[in-house]
Image (cartoon, rainbow, N blue to C red; front, side, top):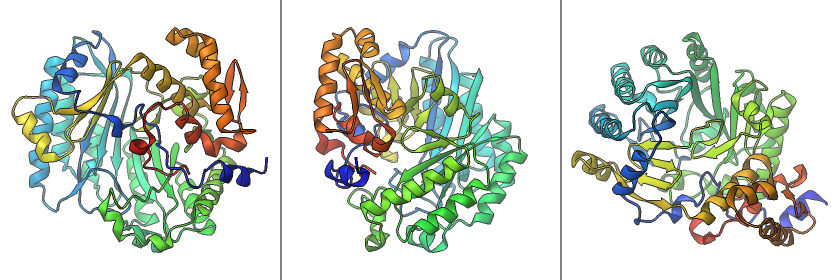
Length: 451
């Protein structure tokens, strides 16, 4: 097929589809799930199990205009200190509910800007985590690090607490683009931060870079990617900027008339993608790249790559518990989300209640469709036999779903009764193909463009 023409006919440049870091997606969560569900699901974790833990720090010293995360600006440490006390209380409540012998296979501090915590706060929070569960033998403790908001004593405190993976946001190194998105961060500051991280013995490094930003061009994204490659990150997330000013009011400050067209966005992605591949990075799913020895590459080759709210992961744990305002937990039984607003979250915890205010209880069909979508997002294929055996459904039923999807994407997919496969030239459509297996209403879920 003539790729761009066919992709355009199938709606690639017009469609609004989810990123599918969950199924169903968060807009479909309801208030039918509350604190009692969270408590019951924590209690059902098997004794001695490995779990993952996510801590949300919703504060930033400055609010970047491109960001749509739930964050709030602060120039004072007072609200951060108060929030930290609430988070420690929530941790203690969780610790009293966890079954015996539970260990942490993954710990992630995100935000917001976790590195605006002082060194003392970092030690305090890390100690509170250690009191409820020890690390497993092959744990990973990752922290989102803002090069503009970190100092030597904070890095030392994080390393002493066991941080062994750092995640550094880059976005783009071009100064005009940085001004247009409210994020000034020089290459030199980024380089020095990464060197300091590695000097503390933290050798696993993630980096995020964006395409689809205002004033971005092929030449500019080439320069930014090449600068990033000079820093030798182990894995890179190449995310498409989602311009949703009706949801994230700060994005109204971004000049929408300087944004690339959908077709130009695809070209920007392809330019960056080729640079990562030429530098011997493996392509992981739809938007990640990793070195041959990185855990994501190893998991992909072994067919064990998974997807969660942090994107692609090699985490084998069945339970991910999110603490802090707006955090989402995933259990085998369903999703549970804390109150999004910091005040409401704090109020719940101070009353001695878990802060869950909405979520979703899985049905048998949710489990099946969720696995099919994850398989597409991770491996670009669904095996009918695996789905039929795992979810006790007739293989003919799965094959019928394949055929229905094939009709929606004529001459694009490789489909037989045994499998559905997205060939390389059609992988820009992956999220749209995944959408065909989503049984929920699109209007609630489609906040991101397809590319």
